[in-house]
Amino acid sequence: MHDDEKNLGVCGGLGSLAFGFRSLWARRARETFDGKVVDEQGASRRACSVTGSGPGAAQTTFTDPKGEFRFLNLSVGSYKVVTTLQGFSTVERNDVVVKLGQNTEPPDHNETLLPSRRR
Image (cartoon, rainbow, N blue to C red):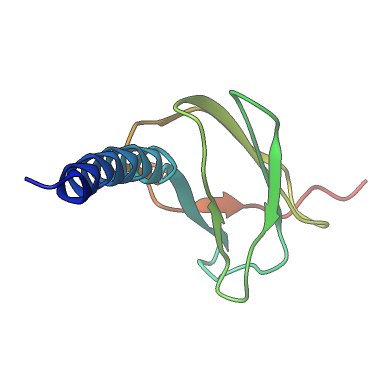
């Protein structure tokens, strides 16, 4: 075996090792939380503020025209999710558990907003 062949073998081994770490990192970053916000008639609600707080910094997103929202790259752990929209009562959901390698959805797949009481 020539010296060049030995060097190629070592570099190839290092390349595989680096790829293995990259794959592990990519799997780790897939934890998400998805949901949909609807009103009491079941109509999708757009532009709702949805805040998830738990491990790490709180994240806020807004629902799209279909009423759907998604948090990406979450740490594993328990979260509190708060949904707000002017004219509706705030919805709080505690203990939303994000697990490694899984997409998390609310148990009923929807956050239901009810009109707030007028004073």
